[in-house]
Length: 60
Image (tube, rainbow, N blue to C red):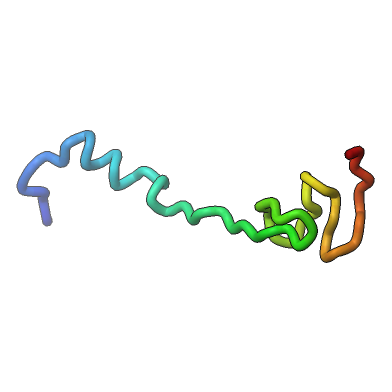
């Protein structure tokens, strides 16, 4: 049966098991109305517009 030649250190083992390197960066797009960075297909939290239409009333 195959046996490891050397002990795998805790740091090496934990680096392999960590999911940090598997995460993708979140996608952002610019709001067409105010230019603020927002998540795609979501209402802009800054101005309340979505696809050029005011969805949420915001106080100035």
